[in-house]
Amino acid sequence: MPELPEVETVRRGLTQQTLQRVCTGGEVLLSRTIATPTPELFLVALQQTQIQEWRRRGKYLLADLSREGEPAGTWGVHLRMTGQFFWTEPATPLTKHTRVRLRFEGDRELRFIDIRSFGQMWWVPPDRPVESVITGLSKLGPEPFAPEFTARYLRDRLRRSQRPIKTALLDQSLVAGIGNIYADESLFRTGIHPTTPSDRLTKIQAEKLREAIVEVLTASIGAGGTTFSDFRDLTGVNGNYGGQAWVYGRKDQPCRTCGTSIQKLKLAGRSSHFCPRCQPCS
Image (cartoon, rainbow, N blue to C red):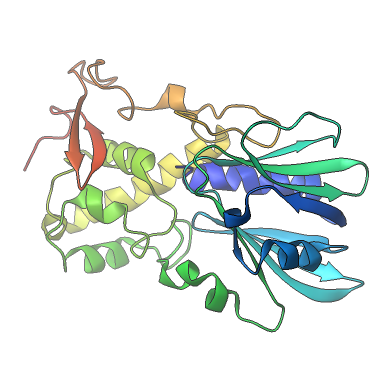
């Protein structure tokens, strides 16, 4: 699933290609991709709108729309597991898994391609709070780069739970945007074993973990995200962070720090990669 760096990479690409462009029409090829309203009303709502800004909240993408200078609502997108956008010419042949295609002025087309078909889109009317329609937004914790995401906040939240720290980091109500890849990478940088109970983290560990999360996400955004499965940017280019990963996706390979073989275990149904020497089990 695309995580914060991949979604941020997509946001930047959408900003570069579609900002201030007018949507002239489109087609929904898979009805369930549109969460609300109906596919027909979704297309009507976007018709002749101009994209004023693309924002990211956690793993959600939000476009502020206008029509003839007046607010025209918000277009929301969640890529889920395999969703990706492709910016191309209308004459380009459709791929098998194209779910939505939107035409823009200048003879360009934005296509939403989703192999697993879990991705979703919403249109929120301008008189409705976005969170009242895209309800997942109201459940998100702070952004990793936000001032309120402090070591104190992290420790205060974690000390209430005995669940493994890796499982806690995947909880979007704790911190928005982190998924499997960057949780593993952050824990490695901090030297914390993924099964460590959350309430056992010390003040120093919480400080180092917050710093590691910010550093890892910043590095991945700079590399255009990670491509371990299907992620591509708007032009079809892979993310490059995968080649820099310390532990994720490197089972049985030597640790880049100590040479010990990277191990993998399952926690709450998710894989966790770690170095048994650099991240001793407490």
